[in-house]
Image (cartoon, rainbow, N blue to C red; front, side, top):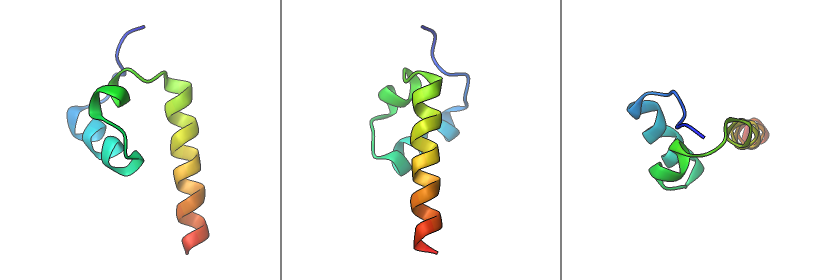
Length: 48
């Protein structure tokens, strides 16, 4: 599996918001990353 095609800045922001190491973000399968981002968005919507 190849690393995600995202910028280093985007990877750093994702790692910070998801509380996972940067290396894990870069090697995370795309479908899992999208699922985690969906969860994060749902949590943010609940807070509002």
